[in-house]
Length: 301
Image 1: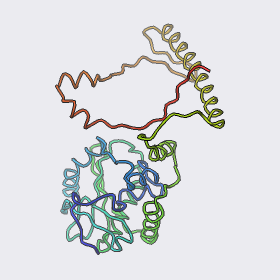
Image 2: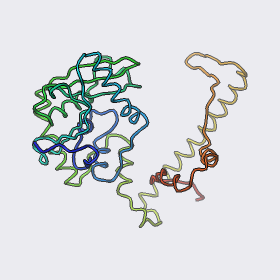
Image 3: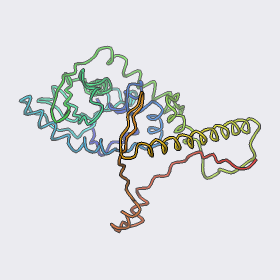
Image 4: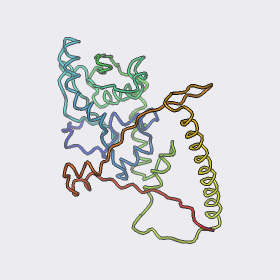
């Protein structure tokens, strides 16, 4: 086995992480093969969400709670382990902790939403993550999933699945060779995938305007007509909403197949907040992301 490295020093773009490979097989609720390819190809960056940051910060606490519940020590881990056949199998894993004698590895989760996914135990993508970790650590006997759900810590033992362990190395190696090394994007799964893959091929520095081809003219005319229809529908919807609100006055109204109610929405004036806190423009710019979009505007014939 290749020597483990500290997580902070490991380049995640050099392989597929245990938490990522479920996306590769279409089992992830958070990512798709196309999104994974964009990140590994350096065409997109993976951002840590507030929920992910909270989970990471609570990781040690959750493990400590599980240690007390199970009456055995779980030692936090900061090392990344690569598959024994690295780099032929570019799979790596960073378990959250190990049990005594490294007889088991542990993965900690903070479940704040999608709780129904956990009713029957760890969801498929979590099971797959542990299976990938076990593949990178062949001497570890089993995995332990530790989850904080609604203030309660629950644990599940995950044994090696022979079928998953058998297919995993070839699947990762083949996908990496075909898509990352072969520079070939996987097929898009969602509309977001289609837009993201298209944006990755757009060069804004050489973009220029030209006259539409006959085919583009046809598509553009269809789009213009659809937008005009939507505008008429939006106006009709807003008129009906206003009429119903005026009739309801200070009441919530329930009808057959519908319900209308008054709700309060809070908004934040971020520009004013930045001014009040005297946040430097350089700091604002460093946290500003630019995303290429395709705009369509209606004009005169």
